[in-house]
Amino acid sequence: MVLTAFRLLILPAMLSLLVLVIACGGGSPPEIETSPAATEPTPTLPARAAAAPTATQPAADAGTGAATQAQAPTRESVPGQASTSGAVPTVAPLAAPTAGENCAPSADLTFDNRPPQGGTLVRLYADPPSIDPHLVSDATSSVITNEVFGGLVTLSLDYQPVLDLAESCSVSDDGLTYTFVLRENASFQDGSPVTAQDVKWSIERAADPDTLSTTAETYLGDIVGVKDKLCTEEAQGAGECTIADEVRGVQVIDDRTVEFTLDAPKAYFLAKLSYPTAYVLDQDQVTEDGSWLDQPNGTGPFRLAQYDIGELLILERNEHYHLGPPHIDSVHMILSGGTAMIMYENDEIHLTGVGTDDLPRLLDPNDPLNPELHRSAQDFSVFYIGLNVNDPPFDDPKVRQAMNYAIDLPGIAENVLDNRVSKATGVIPPGFPSYNDNLRGYTFNPDLARELLESSTYADALASGDFPRITLTISGSFGATVPTYLEVMLEQWRALGIEIDIQQTEWATFLQDVNDKKYQMFSLGWIADYPDPENFLDLLFHGESQNNHTSYSNPEVNRLLEEARTERDRDRRFEIYNQVEQMVLDDAPWVWTWYRGEGYALIKPEVSDYFLLQMSIPKYRYIYFNK
Image (cartoon, rainbow, N blue to C red; front, side):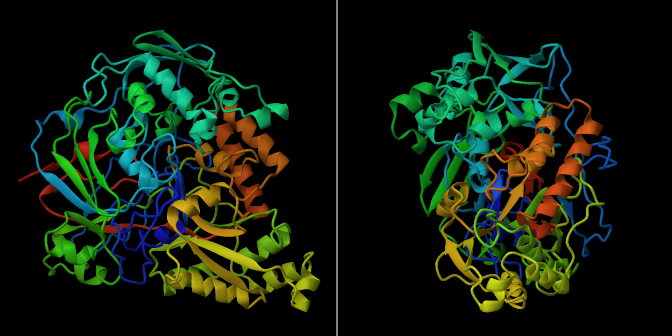
C-alpha cells in the first residue's frame, strides 16, 4: 500500500498525520510543528503504496525464513524514558495452506465477549482520496474502508489471514481450488444476507475495466479469468488477452458457497483476499443507487453515517456485524483541521501523534501527560524517491547509482530528523519475512558518485551545462514549505552539478499521476498489506506490475519473481527474494531513503484497546471506554 513520503518523516518522529500515504501519508516533517490536518497515532497505514510511500515481520532468521512467534499488538506506556533495546518486532511469515479443511482460522473473537458500552472516539483525520474499496490504493482511504466493508478474509492482530465473512475454507490437494462457505449470519449493514453471488459479482465488478481499479490485477490476478475480465479492446487487439463477461475462476456453488480457482498454487493468496479490492459490496445498492458511496451498505463493524468533505466523517456501530457489534457507538473524524496537541490537551480529541518539539517534555516523568504517552513499534514500510528509468537522465543506471551515493542519509537522520528514522538499506524493512541485513547497499560516497557521472552517457552534458532538467514531484499544496530533509538532499545533489526543481501536487492527483507514470522523479513510501516479501518485491519491481511506478524492468528479475510465486519451499522462496532484492539495489530504480523508526502517541487514559499496529487492518471494533 502506498504511503506518502511526507508522512513518512512525520510518523516516525511524530506519528501524526495520516493524510498522505499512498498507502499512508500526510503530515509535516518531524522537525516542524505538526500541521493542522489529521493526526494518526498508529505508525502505519497500508501497502498499499505511499507517498514517501498502499499497511513487516521477518522470521527468526530472516535469511532462511524460519518462523518466529508473531508479536501481539502493543500500546506500550513510556515511563519517563524510551526503551533503548533497539529490538525490531517481527511477524511470522505466511504459512502455505495445506490441502483439506480449515485453510485459515476464524477471526479472533477474544475481544468480543464484552457487551457494547457506548461512547464516541474523536480524532483528527484527513479526507480519503476514495472510499470505494475497489479503487483504494492508499492507507488514508484504507483506514475507512477497513471499518465499513469486509471480505471473505481479513488479517488478525498478529497479521495472519483469518476468516471474516466466511465460516470455513478448504483447499484442494493441488492447491489450485479454494472453497469458502459463508457464515449463516453474514449480512450487510441493513440486515440483508450476504450471498455467494454477492461475492462473485464483487470480484467481477473490481475486475471490470469500467471500474478503473488500479489494484484489481495486483490483488486478484491470481484468480483464473480475472485478467480476461480486465481485458480491453485495445489489449485484445494486441493479442494480450481475450475479453470475458465473467471471471470464470469464481463459481457460485450455492447461496453460501463460492469456489475460487487459481492459475497456480500461491502461498500468499488468502492474505491477498484481505485487501479492499476483494471486499464484498451490495450489488443492488451499487447498481441502482448512483450515490451509494454517500451511505454505503457495507459488511464491516461500522457504517458510514455522515461524510462532509473537509469537515467531518462519522462512523457508527453496525448492530448486525457478524463478529459481534463494536463496543463503542461511533468514531468522529475531524477533517477541518486544528492543532493536534492543543486539541488533545483541551480534551477535544482522544489521541494524537507526538512531534519532536513536544516529545522531550512528555518523556519527563513529572509531566502530567507522561502516563498517557505510548510508544509504537516501527512499522513495515520503506520510503524512497522513485526514478523513471525511461526518462533522461535516469535511463542510465550510472546516474541512478550516483544519485544514491550522493546522499548522506545517516547525517540527515541525525541532524535533521532527530534519528526518528533509519537509513533504508534495501526494499524489505527490518522485522519482515525475508529481511536480509547482508545486502550491498549504498553509502555516502560523493567521490564515487562523481566517478559514476563522469563515466555515464551524460558526462559531456553535465560538463557543458546541458544536463537534462530534473523535476522531483512530492505530495503537498502549491507553495507549501519543502521539508528540510529534502532541502538537504537537493543541496547534496547540487554539489555534483545536478539541479533539481520541486513540484508539489495535491494528494489525490499525485496518486493518480504516480499510477500513470507521469513523473520523472517522485517521493513515496510503501507499507505492507500482508506479511510476505511478494507484497514488496513483486508488486513494486516486476516489469508488468501496476504498482511498478518507475517503469523498471529487468528480465532476470521478472523470471525470478515468477519462480518465487509458485515455489512451495519457504526457505527457497526467501532465497530467491534475497537475490532479487540485491539485483534491484544494483539497478537503482529508487533513491533509497528511510525505514520509519519508533513513534510516540498520546492516548487518553479512558480509551482501552486502541492498538498501535504495524500494518493497516480493521481495529476500531476492539476499542472500549473503561470509564
